[in-house]
Length: 252
Image (tube, rainbow, N blue to C red; front, side, top):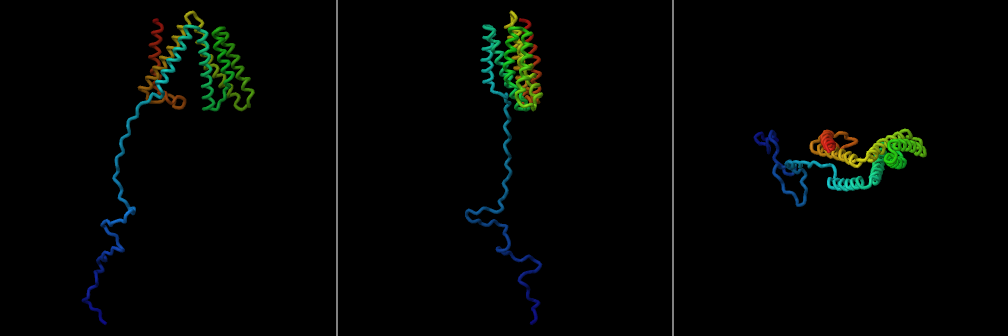
């Protein structure tokens, strides 16, 4: 049989085949069955996140509790200072023991240094009392005996780290109780109570001025590792406050 050249094919081979819904996707959205999850959901438009609220500058401590403790300690100190001087010597001894406990605890926690606390606490309290009763000679004798007690006490433990521990112990004896002995020495004078009060006020005003200036204007940390909450500008607040209090004390 001869093919009829006039008969046209069902579609032009140069054109795409007709649309078949079973094999080709449709551009129009199709109805989804109830409960079906769409395979390619359209992305949601980016919603701008709200700007973070400005952080309120914190004082770094509970001011209410700090002020209450400070007022309470101040009342005890002033009462013991002007009523019975021997009681104030006991207050100094207690403060020395607490300071030694805190110092040795931080040394062991941060550096693994085990400075012997028992001979330091006993010798530190004895150093303060000896300075008040016997003067500078008594304070030096108590200091020497405290250092010797630290060496002997540490010998009862394993020898590892002996030199490091006894060095820290002697340093702690000089740093806390020996310096506190000067307060007891000032107390022995006729106007010793006023001298000690001036010394305490200088310390309080200095620390308060440094705290206020550092909290208000400080941005850079003075010692990020040892004092992470103390800004560098806190040092600038100490000098004016000390000068002002020293001038008031001298004029009075």
